[in-house]
Length: 208
Image (cartoon, rainbow, N blue to C red; front, side):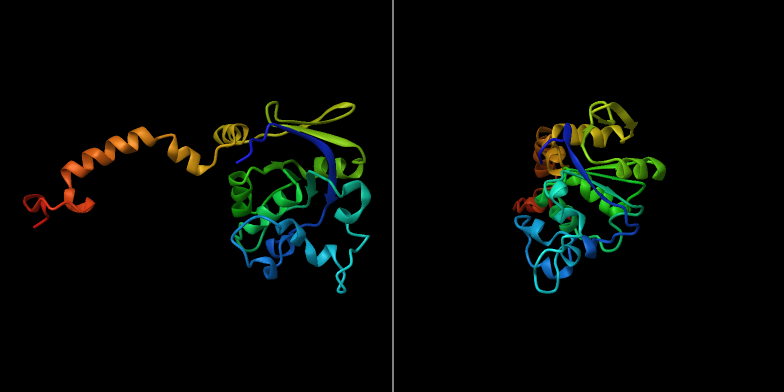
């Protein structure tokens, strides 16, 4: 997982409440177990017209926001099904941070596991950011702050262990592998004590 330390760029405002994962990545795109190319399907029902052409009114099709790395969203973002393809699609598009008044819990966890920073701010702060957002924002996970060219705008909180994992680019597999030595010691001891579990043929140790 790529570490998240800081990101600077324009933030695309999409202040709709209750945007669900089927809107983020419609079901017809869920035909792959890989992450590559899912950015094309991000918000595809809103980004494209029935003939496949882009809808110029949708925020991510507007010139200012085509390369947005930050999304400002409404309340309960990511509700609906638990599909992990939703953060995959956001990440493949280039979005590394989402600022919202709140997130669906499973989507929130999936973001953290995939290197996306979900920032929770009060609704009034989110609306203020969206209303005056034409230039670049800087989201800094080290200082846990959001700032623009004029200085600091808002501070946010993230649980310390999750913050550390994002800063270091660690996912759950990395956390498990960090205990490799202790796991090996346990396995060696368990192999001696319960050889039948490991395919051993010492019958005197078999369970009776």
